[in-house]
Image 1 (cartoon, rainbow, N blue to C red):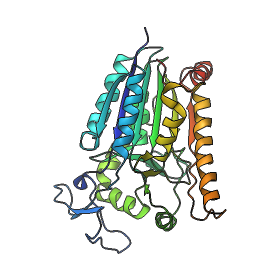
Image 2 (image 1 turned 60 degrees about the horizontal axis):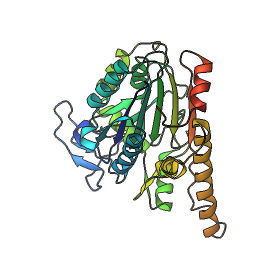
Image 3 (image 1 turned 135 degrees about the vertical axis):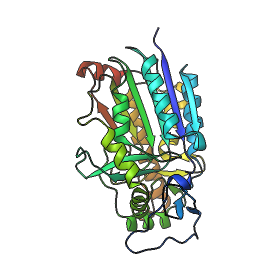
Image 4 (image 1 turned 120 degrees about the vertical axis):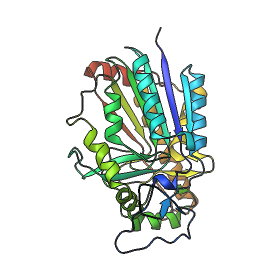
Length: 321
């Protein structure tokens, strides 16, 4: 009988001692914001760290955990302080050892997204995308190497409600992000560009060592993988009191299991739901779209052992073991 294991991550804030900021461009960081705290990090001389406060990422994780449990997954939730890179890596590796052909691994992440300098040369934009876990940034190359540990025939579903969660080219400029913040009452799930640079420089040696320790080229992927991401490369993921825009739309379309169709159908319906939300907001603003946020989710399919296995996976009813 097929098995399903799932992991659901929600990070409302990070440990400032794991995100020390090296001042950049001649600017000094002053502790006047909820996003910057004094730190006494033993491995750095920098006295300010990033906190990255968000309010609804743990709620997203809780809702995805409930969905997974309702579908009979062996589900685990990691919220904020528990969502360390060590815990996440350990859980993925343990799942990879347990799951066989025909089994499913589901993982959802809700939190900030960021970028660091790519040292492997596999990114056209020169940037590796990251999830901001509690203790440090978790690099996309680290994830890819972990996915290669799953056996042939295992099905991997990854859902990322964060910025930089598409196929991941550089985000728009921080000035554009700041302008969007003024227009929106919600929260951007992005570490702004200046902060991302400062965080990377604050622990550059650590992040460079992680990248250099990974296999290059990466090991081949045996398991089929699909990625649902909250937005396109050039967009930002938003969150409100009731959760991330993407996660809320997913849950509405899923409709407590009443949804009919496959993973590809689910992706299209989520996209349609977000477009409908946008259209309603523009109508409410009497046609003025300048203060209305459009978020277009992405759906990425990554072939493992065969194209036919991936096609069969995409046509499968979502979250079915």
